[in-house]
Image 1 (spheres, helix red, strand yellow):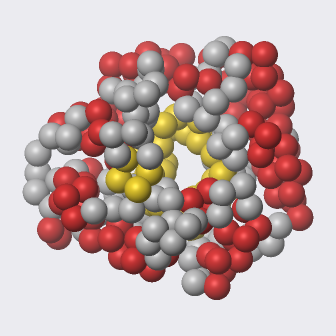
Image 2 (spheres, helix red, strand yellow):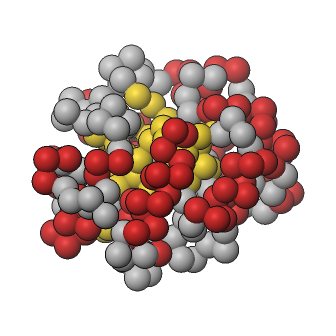
Length: 237
């Protein structure tokens, strides 16, 4: 059975403690600690050594999705703290201004493929340039981003085939035309099934659909993700 959990930002925007409490209540053992906004990063990093994370089998951190080059060294200093050494860090390609500086994260660095808003990291060609500069980095595959870029799911298959050996985490949600992360629809689930066989069953799956205002329910989204990534029902592209 695939290990499936949630991003804290999808459950409670800016309130990782409340999100962790929800996950514990539902006995979900997979979590991504989200600091998508720059101002959220330092409070999260400072709190991590004090959080009770013993019940979670997999914990990753999502770095801020937007900051300027002047903030890069500050962000890296926070993410490189010794007490975080066990946690992978998901980073968007467009905030990696100085690739050589990010090498210090080694295999902890998970580079995520992007949606249509971003100028880099959207396809195999763009990601390969970055992986060539960061050979130890691993891959966070966002299946919703990939479907938005190419609804045929061909690019999704190419991403997984090209970087499958680096794959360390998967993000799943429906990404709409405005690049918002929505609950998984039947159409999205059907599309996702077409590439499920390329995702090893031990890879942690992180749900990102926003359900912080009752858009859906945690158990429903976990079930939708499980069905969407069921290898038994998928077809090969």
